[in-house]
Each structure stands twice: as structure tokens, then as C-alpha cells.
Image 1: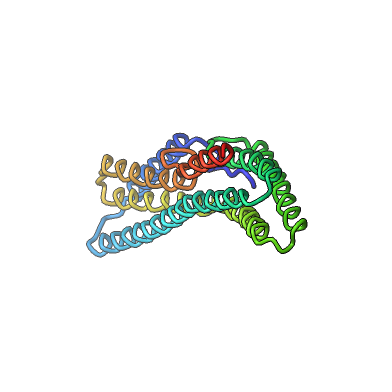
Image 2: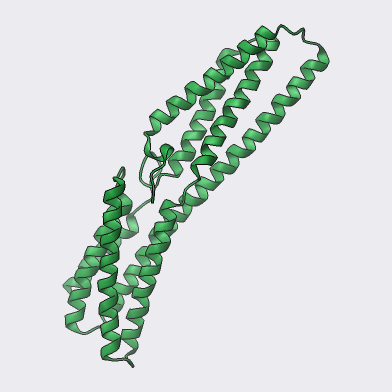
Length: 266
């Protein structure tokens, strides 16, 4: 679990830097093209137009592909919230099959575990060290729950309820690992940086062609830079589970807390 540059900076700052970079690229390309002072013949215009179209098409493909990567990871995180809450809920219900003394212990452990898991995934801008500490606490609670499941099966090896409860605790632990991987599995930062550099190149080529033609459509170029910047920010926003505009709903975990509190009163 490591912090990366683009995933640790505010989105407004990333957007501002991206927009400035693209505007500088288009203006620089226009200035270089203007200084070239090449007389534009019809074949040259066609060639430059073909190059611009090819580069922008490739960039559009890469942008769409990267957006699809971020969206699939976002959907996976949403599914993992439901999957984990279902796994914990199953373990909670099966704990009612245990003897009274173990039910009380397990209910307390379940409450602590859900609170830790909710804290890990619902809060934004959690420092890396604090997140590591929370994951360590969750693993310690898993160990305690597994010890209770092991004790239940050891006391009565032929007990079907004890076996079902042990299976549910094992599934709970497995799902926790899957969800941790889903949270940390975002679009590689090198892909985003490469996409940003490719965008600057594409916009620069567009400005260069305008410079050769000595016609600078400045406002449409700025609008294009703004559209690319917004698309780039949306990709990063999708890849941040608890920051920005798109957030993974924790409704199923909140409902699980209510179920645990209800079971404890029975």
C-alpha cells in the first residue's frame, strides 16, 4: 500500500496543472508553426490534416480505454462492499447457532470489525499510516473470530452449525482480502501520466497546424483543452473510492450495523 502522486493531490490542483499544460502546448505548437513560415500548399494541408486526425483519434481511443479501466474498477469496488457486507451478515446470523457465551463474544467482535471496516473504506484522505493501523486492527479481530470458530468446532467436531459458522468466518476473511485489493487496484499512475503527455502532444500538433496556416482558433482550442482536462479529472475521480464527486456507497455496511444491533438485543 503506497501513496502515488496523482492519487495524493487535490483534484482541483491536478485539473489546473493539466489545463495550463495543454494551453501551453497548443500555444507553443502555434508559435513553432508560425515561425516555420512554410507556404501551405494543398498537399501539405492534406498531410498535416491527416496527421492531426490520426493523433487525435489515437488519443481519443486511449482516453476511452483508460476511462473504461477506471469505471470497471469503480464498479468492482461497489460490488465488493455488498459482497463483504453479505459475508459478515451471514457470519452474524450463523453465530446465533453457537452457545450463549460464544454468541455474546462474537457479537462484540462483529461490532468492532464492522466499525473498523466502515472507517477504512468510508473516510476520505486517511493518512497512509492510519490506514495501515486500521487494517492491522481488522486482521487482529479476524484472528479472534477465527479462534472462536476453531473453539466451536473443536468442542463439537460433529456439529453442523459450528462447521457452518467456521466456513462463514473463513469466507469473511477471504472477502476482506479481495476488498483490500479492489481498493488499491486503480489505473496505474504511469498510464495516466502517459495519457497526459500524449494529450499535450496531440494539442501541440493541432496548434502547429494552425500556426503553419497562420490561423489561430484560440477559443475553440481552449475549449478542447478544457474538455480533455475534465475527462482526465473524471478518470481520476472514478479511481478514488472516497474522494471527489463519485463515491462508493456504504449503504449495505450501514444496514449491516443495524442487523448486528438487532441480533444483540435478541
